[in-house]
Length: 129
Picture 1: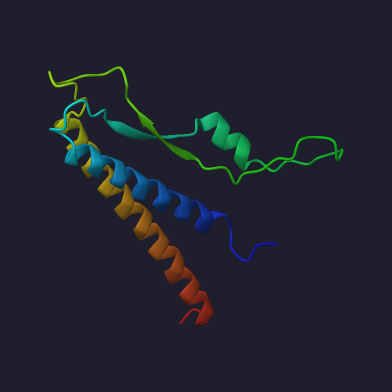
Picture 2: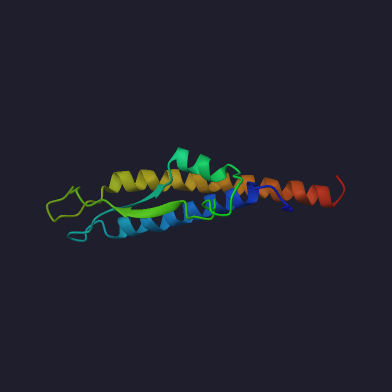
């Protein structure tokens, strides 16, 4: 039995995703003028894969495959077939700045939710006072 629900783990994974996305976007922006640099992006698992991983599974036989939800849900991919500039660079600065702003809003929402969860726990510990 876990002490807390999966909410903390999900929020932690969301913060990890946002951090990885921030690093990738920053690298893309830093290399906007680098010849032959290919833009990178962070992808997540599909909805079906995430749903399947989150469902509890029961093995009826030891020979069956073991179900695990500990796999990394994000991956960095390079966009190979796209070129926006004559020097072979595939970074679109407008797209990257939009992604940066979107990621910042996402990060703020996740940290606000995490702060709320900790405030609720603190309230429970103090006995509702």
